[in-house]
Length: 186
View (cartoon, rainbow, N blue to C red):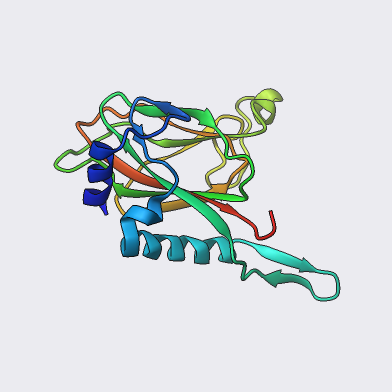
């Protein structure tokens, strides 16, 4: 899939939304990635259903098996590129899949982390900054949470969650795919 994305990058101008440098395709990923793109979408759709439930007034919460509408696009970031903080209005779930983390032959930190902003802002730390919540992974409450890209990793998150991509410092390219899922009837 990486070859298809880099070929598309070289032959299409791309679009700019939250980009701070880098290249982003239009949201017609399946048209030009064919079977490989469809396999990724199928996997991510299954995950969206696993993370969702549907309320039934008589039976309570039921496992979701929805025919999600989606749009998907590719991103290519090179040295100095990132994405400004943003959300994905109109979608329910969003996902990022790293096709290539751009780390080949390099050890250590090259930046480019996916960063989620805690929607509570600094409220969680206002009472006493040394007081922490005794919940695994919650030490950054009120700040942000970062996920380091790794080839083959997929992260799904609520579309309303503000996120950004920190500046990448590797020689790259770092190649990823983003997907938005919208529930049926929306």
